[in-house]
Length: 86
Image (cartoon, rainbow, N blue to C red; front, top):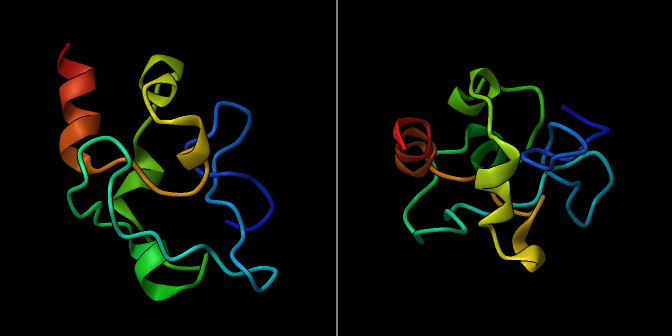
């Protein structure tokens, strides 16, 4: 997953954390504050499988994320599902 931003309209990846090539450890959804279940953030590595790799996050959903949190933390499964149902 290295190289792009997760859940950013211009890319697909979480931004790198303080050490290049490592994801930021952001376990909470920026929309609801619940645990986001992001395996990448939890493991601290981009080479792990995560539920969010198979989900498309629309630009409208990402636009709801506060700008300071975009590319910093994954949206949780519940918020992603709610956006798909809306």
